[in-house]
Image (cartoon, rainbow, N blue to C red; front, side):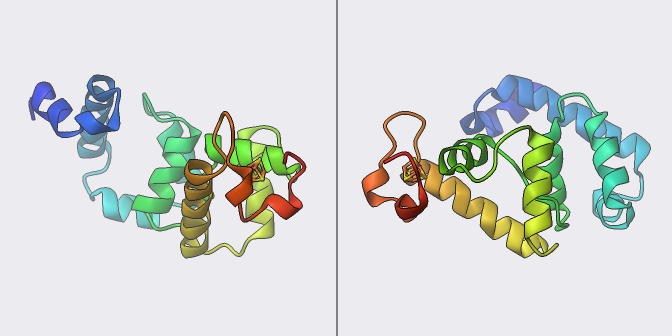
Length: 150
Ligand code: SF4
């Protein structure tokens, strides 16, 4: 597909030109390295091996790799994003590096992709609705009784 057409289709995601080029690069990688298809590649490869391979592809960092594994692959890899850092840092429960936070969640939760999926969605919802970057809306936050900020 022409890059401009692809970019137009994903324009609403932001940084669409850069993302379009990376999507094209990723598609070419899959066609060459995984002729068995992405579904099979994602389902049969040992999880950490799959993650290591994804991280070697241009434009794929830990959050993207883990999102692909969790949402596209349906496999249990906890996604840590800016909302996770912000909310759990403010709560004083966990903070630190991406790997540190991920490991804390994966130790505490059952290794079930549906749980990770829902948990991450709830974190995103709380980050958007209440725990904003500036002037968080603590008054309506369901976690305010356990948070040191308000
Ligand atoms: S009480 Fe405020 S700072 Fe604490 S988690 Fe909720 S919105 Fe964020």
